Image (cartoon, rainbow, N blue to C red; front, side):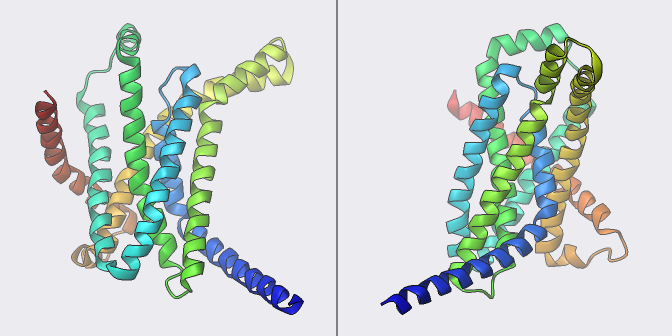
Length: 288
């Protein structure tokens, strides 16, 4: 009886060792996409009133957990029974990410910047509606990025037992969510921490200087993240196209992969833009 119990413990220990090794490899493989995920979601989680930043981020985080709760079992089932479908899902997701990236570029280039009074008036007028729309957009983008993360993680353990696959993909999904949104929370609350340092130090000494530095640094980080997040969307989309469409994978072999992926991301976004805009108009007409 005792020997059987210890044998079970030994099996569990061996399984955990396998999962730990596989999770480490999978996390390393997904590091690039996690960096893009951080840039994209940090940019999406900003632009709210200070009192709403953490509630909004918590809403997005819960949506991210729900996304992975949906994606992980579906990915495992599809990989077991219909692996070819995963490729098409990734490509469709790539078009959505590319659309978001191109839409941001077009908005930056052609839309007139709003004055401060206009921004305040708009925030007062439809603050709740705008907040919900941004949360939904962030969760949708997270869904696509989560699909990519889960598929890459699953790809590292295809030769392992199903138990190792399930545990490894689940561990990576949890680490991805906690890690990304934990860092996003630190970023969006940087200015509040700076203000607290200034207040407690009575605006004197090293802590006051550090507080002023953090307050001034946040707008710069937000602007950088807006650019990096847009580029990340296009790179992830282009990477999906290049790695899942055979023709694109072999075209322009002498061009740097990052340039090729960015270019295909832009092209994919330009293709998806009229389709998505048309779909939004049809949907708005149907709702009326």
